[in-house]
Each structure stands twice: as structure tokens, then as C-alpha cells.
Length: 443
Ligand SMILES: Cc1ncc(COP(=O)(O)O)c(C=O)c1O
Image: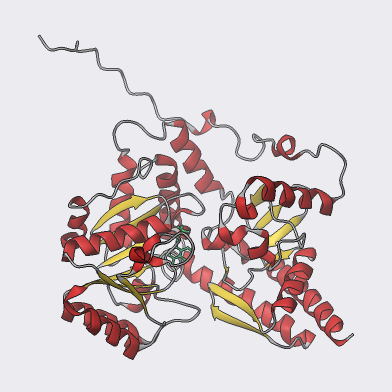
């Protein structure tokens, strides 16, 4: 007699139908959540959220780049810091000020905020049960689909953030090679192995050596110094510009020669430069790669992907996260993959990004503003200032004109910036801000 009774199988529930789901737009009343307790003017109301956040959240925001000081270069009330709705490329503040967003949530959204196809897929997944004691079938399906579009992907492990995925890639490389040392170039998130500073013991990162971007001799020296201890070379392949072919080729050659794992961190470049990332663009295939951000149009998921003989090492070490395979973010990836299959999303991101940066370049030259340059590549471009005070003032003026530009880092194109009026609006706001900035400097 078995110790449990066999039950009649429960008939599977039908998947939710479209008509069972709430309407996307009208269903959620955000006004209640943001209603001011007292009548405040728009600026004061938006500023009240900046102050409230500073009281209850260290730094004012859980994402470093969204803290007031990171947004504006000053943690005083320079401009709004919180949104209550976002749609396309436009954020609405609690005071209902509309702001065109050129930062696109640090590049995590490349289609648009609240995109209908992505939102619907996520809602369907939530309604069907987000997690259970088994893994969801979509984990397998999305992994299979990623293997079709990413050159190095034969196997996939999902995680929740870019930093987790990159840390997992390094762990896999160390396990596969039984070696400790890592040569690195780029930003890989907040985890100990790739950072130094307060709260991080030196021992946490003493096996990581950073090298400058696109510097072949420095890369060669670091790899040779590590020699038979070299587990991996991990590169962010695009940092403000495309790398030279020589640098990428040297990384591939040195890894092959020394028996190390080549990892591309494609958290920013994946589903943006090309669907399959920089490796698809360049034709150079790494052994492992990490993807996140635009892959899920704003939902929390990242992936480490790679060649089977190396990915196999993921089972020899411990890499696991309770919600790694939850269905809503996987559904978002599925919807993004559908868009990439149906449309030339990345070509559009290059072309729209070019229009965005050219509109700002025109604003710079028309205003005669000095000490300002527009850099980067078209889908990830940045405005560089010689002077931090002028930068702070520009950002304040531009947001007052209804456009948020990223301070000291990338602006990211999205399909949602593709309307001509959006480009005109970006140019108008930038021009007005640069003209005022120039007048103030001359006064
Ligand atoms: C290249 C790269 N790797 C890793 C990360 C970390 O990702 P996350 O912030 O999702 O942990 C980032 C974030 O900006 C990134 O740009």
C-alpha cells in the first residue's frame, strides 16, 4: 500500500483567454496611488517624492543611476525623480508632467514602455500561474529560442539580473577550467568579484585584473601574466565605440592559446546592436555570453548562454535562484523574440538612434554651445560635457523642457522614439536648453 492515495488527475485548467484579462490601459488607476494629500504645484509635488524617497531609501532609489544625484549631478531638487506611468518613450510624473525619456530605463527597454504585445504576454503568464513546484515549460521554450538567435548559445541558464548572469558566467568559466584568474574590461554590475571599495574585502576581487578598453598590448600582458591560471577573459565588447577588430581577435586568440574561456558581456549590446549581440555583429563567437536588459523589454531576467562543453560546468557548481524561471519575465522575452522575428528591430534601433543623436548634434551647433560633444554608437549614444556644472544645468533645463537625457552615460534608442514628432521634440528641448545655457555662460 503506497503511503499516499492516488487521486483522480485534476483536469488541466484552460489557459486564460484574451477576453478574460483586464483591459490593459483603463484597468489600473494610478491616480489614487499618487494623489497629493494637499494641493501642491507640479514642481513641489514631484519634489515631494524626491524627499520622501530620500527618507526611506538610502540614496533615494534602489537603482544607483536613478538616484537624484546620478540623474542630475546634484541631490537637491533639480528635476523630477519619480514616475507614475510610462508609455512608449514618455514618462508621466506624479504631477502629470510628460517627459520624453532618452534613457529608456538604462537601456532595459528597446521596444517601448507598456508595449501592448509584451504587456499582454506578461499578463497571460501571470494569470496562468507564475511559478510552481516544477519549472515552467516556457523556460525550455525560451532557452531553445535563444539558442536559435545567439551565435554562441547551445545552452542557457536564466537569472534575474545582469550582475547575477555575469557572476554566473565567471563561476562557470572557473569551474570548467579549474582556474581562478579573470582578465576583465567593462562594467559588470555590483557584485564583489568585479568591484572594489567600501564593504568589499580585497580578497573578493584579487583574482580579477581589469584592463583598458581596446588596448591589445595591455590585454596580452594581463593574459600572459595569468598564464595557466587564466580562467576567463570577460569583455564588454562595446564601450562608447566599437572595438578594433585586432582587440577582439587578440582576446579570442589568447583564450584559445591559454585554454581560457572567452566571455562577452552582452547585457547592453544584446537585442540592440544585433539580436544576437555584438558577436552576431562582429562574427567573433565567444564561449559564453550574458544577456539581459533589452531581451525582456523591462522585465527582470538575464541569461548566461554558451557552448555545451563549458555550460555543462554549471551543473558542477552551485548557481541557482528561486525565481530564475518565473513565467512573466520569460513571457516578456518570448514577446520580444517574436518582435525580432517579425521586424528588423535592431536596424530600426540604429536608424532611430542616429536620428536622435543627430537632432542633439544640430542643437549643439545651432546654439553655439561649447565644451559639448555627442559620442557613442547610434543605438547607445551620449552627451559629453567638459564641465560638470554646465552639464547639471543643461539636464535641469532639458527636463524642464520635457526631455530626460542621461547624465554621463548612454541614451538608448527604442522603437518608441521612432515617431518624427519625438525626434522634433528632442531637438526642440535640447536646442532650448543649449541656447539658455550659452546665454547664461555669456552673461
Ligand atoms: C555590460 C553590463 N553588464 C552587467 C550589468 C549589470 O546588470 P544589472 O544592473 O541588471 O545587474 C550592466 C548594467 O548596466 C551592464 O551594462
